[in-house]
Image (cartoon, rainbow, N blue to C red; front, side, top):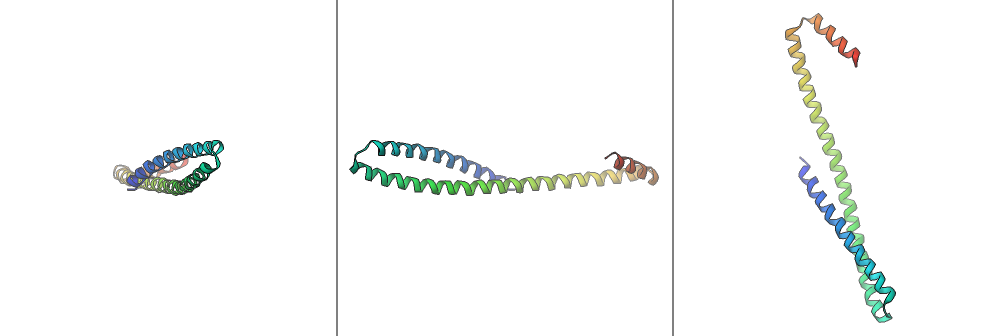
Length: 120
C-alpha cells in the first residue's frame, strides 16, 4: 500500500545524497580557491561559496525530512505486515479448530489443546 511512496522516497534520498557529495566537492574547490586567490577574486568566490553553503543546508534539511518519512513508512509497512500475518494465522487457527472439532470428540480435542498449551 505504501510501497510505491517508499520506493520513490528511497530514490529521492539516493539522489539527494549524491547532490550533497557534489556540493561538498564544490565547497572544497571554493575553499582551495579562497586560499590561493587575490582579494578582488576572493570576494566573488566568497559570495558563491556562501550561496552554495545555503543551498547545501537546504538539501540537508530536505534529506533529513525524507529520511524521517522513510523511517515512518518502514514502521507503518512493518505494522501492516504484522497485522496481515496475524490475520492469516487467526484464519488458520479457526480452520484448524473447526476441522479438529469435526473429527475429534470434545474430550479428545480438549486433551490435545491442553498438551499444546503446556508445551508452549
